[in-house]
Image 1 (cartoon, rainbow, N blue to C red):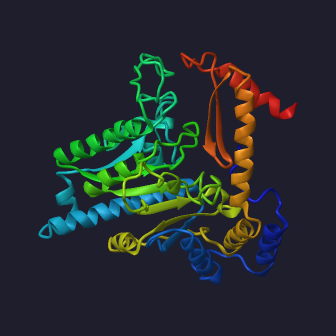
Image 2 (image 1 turned 60 degrees about the vertical axis):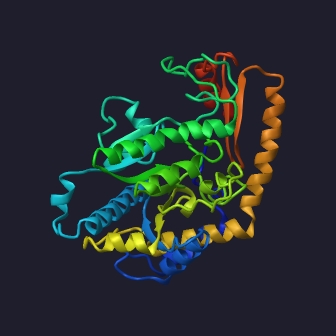
Length: 390
């Protein structure tokens, strides 16, 4: 599962671009270089709406960390505008607290701020717990989640605790799962606090290649924005055409339940991993309005190595290869072929419980029993560990 070498290992175009730039100049980002401006423009051109402001960082964790800061800045600005007589922000915020809504089993990074919104880590070890300002809602898993579709009522989740409630359709599942976000927004506001943001992957990677049911994203984003919060789309593992159908995972869910509505466009997008095809390159893209709120706080943002000439050369070359070699289309074609093959194997093998995903973002879930969904944990571990080397 290598989602970093987006254009393959040692792609000659990217190697050539990196080598040439290293021979010419590589320095810290106090010194302006045209590569950064050009890469910013090419990146923003791939995104819809007014997502025009780009902050370069070194990793997906840094990107999501900065995205949370931008959301907090936006919340601060809203608070000042609603209470203009309170010049001291801390006086106003002593009575309320910004809350982040995240999805159970999600992973968004390894900094303290991103670990706070990464329930995947909350369930491991004793270091991290879900803090009070983070609201965790159920993962919108329609296969083995709390609200599965057309499954035997009464089955248990894999943890054996929570009873599943069967849903008759994808729309019903979307409404039910989204209601948790709606309820959290209502509760946060009723307690005198504020909703800062919803952070969400359009296709949840570490959680197990989970795609939310159609219209789920729209319902959640509408609720969060109604409460004054922002939608952060984490595209670190899913962006740049990996899904085949679309270049960004947040676009995958725009194919909703048929309601006449505008396309859901994030307020903040984060990218990383494949951006530099192995070089340390990531970014946060947002709107001028949100960037202005961040700038108004007066705290300069600077990152020594982020967007260096060499890393930007890698990013520019990666985007060029992505387009020239039609890698998004290739992901779609190969992904569809793999889905056909997996489905054929599933038809004669009871161990395969579910096949899901899009493009080269696919998941095959193994179970010991298709009715109870008992996880085939040991068998899956064996396949992942040994089969690739046979």
